[in-house]
Length: 456
Image 1 (tube, rainbow, N blue to C red):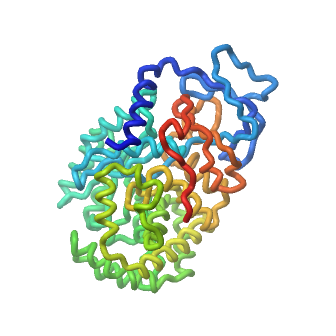
Image 2 (cartoon, rainbow, N blue to C red):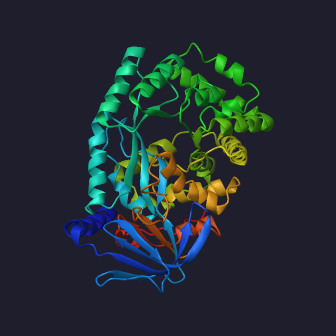
Image 3 (cartoon, rainbow, N blue to C red):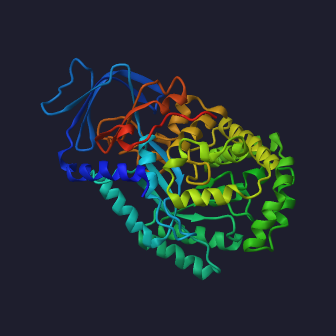
């Protein structure tokens, strides 16, 4: 057991025993960040009781009842908790235990909600248990706002059955990966629609991005097939893939990558962006992934102050992957094209949400979402737009905006108390004074975690 996990357990267990006794909060004289309008409102006194925001009043008229814990918000900013729209809490490929070690890292960085991207049907019950424990104050962790089950299937019948099993288990959506053949992907889309589930994930390697968007795949993750769609050779590249399956298909796609990147066309990308914007397919580009790959040679992860927060088996996995030969030039090309694509998508008003693919190597839970929002800012997002991509945007996408995503009366009290104005610069979201999780006040130091940004 790591020292961090031990300190976390020592903090969580008393909290669980005292969950019912958590006092209501009064955060006084604070500037509220209105993420919907991108405005500062205040000063205001925000009252929290039973995990919900019950009032947002002028300080002179606020009624602070006896027993409320007062938090002086003068000079501070109150924003909604952040949501990471692409995480992996389970290790189904390796069979290792779930990534519960990441929970305090998320919360200390203000991440109060996540979208889990690859669950097995049997794991949905575990996620529901985590949700209840967070609600009851027995667990310090982000709330799992949505969970997807991966579906492939060797044939149409198997794919249909897998979709029905996912629905019965309580999955929120179906996840597809790059290796799913075009024919199976169409069956998955059809069956998912019949049972009332959306399909998200990678646009398969045999499918054009625009085809997927028009067919109803709700998201594209990691810009899959966007690189091809912005290439002048998209048709030839995809034609070569059509008869392949499994590892052979993915192997050819990977072999084609340099040609894909070197035939990037700005005009094709802008045309694609305009069409995607009209269709409305949401993109979760996970920019922090290609950025980390392009910059991995510049730093030693063992010297990163965050390395110690990883569980031992996760450290071993990262070491193994990072030891593999890396084509640094290709990684730099991938990053530069990724930036151009997201910049074009944003300019065209394609819906874009913040996600990270944590815990991929060099992508640290919680910390990486701040990097993702800063990278979105590098691609032309204003601070308000970057903040929306991790707050009200995810809430609206998931159909949860009545309860989540902004600081408003009646909503869940998942909040960040910040020492800097996040609408002035997105980096101020790292300056966390406290996190309110389901109405309970937490300090990053209580979790044994410093969220100070490492030097790039």
